[in-house]
Image 1: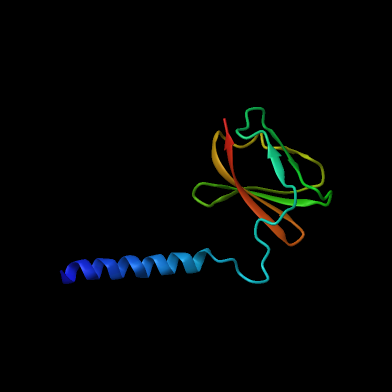
Image 2: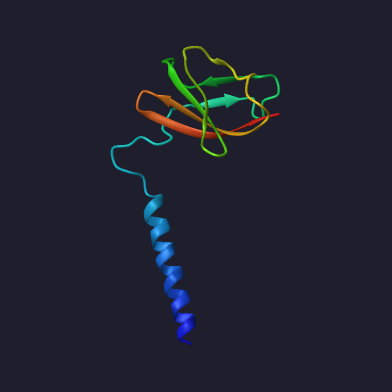
Length: 108
């Protein structure tokens, strides 16, 4: 019986810790790029197009699934050439002023 209470206690403890980490940090814009869209995804032609409501430059960083930075550039047009990346799953981080968004990127 005491063993069940112990497991319930651990479950509650981890649930509280996980919910505390889900909260957004004050003063930090997360995923707030208005009208952000990038296509196609999955990529098969080596190019993606990134658009948002703003026409200002975007800082683009692409990471592999292990978290290693594999590509970085500043984009002042819509078109981004990623033909030098191998097929696989990546994380793309798009930064526009203080707003940042991250998405999954699949290259065929």
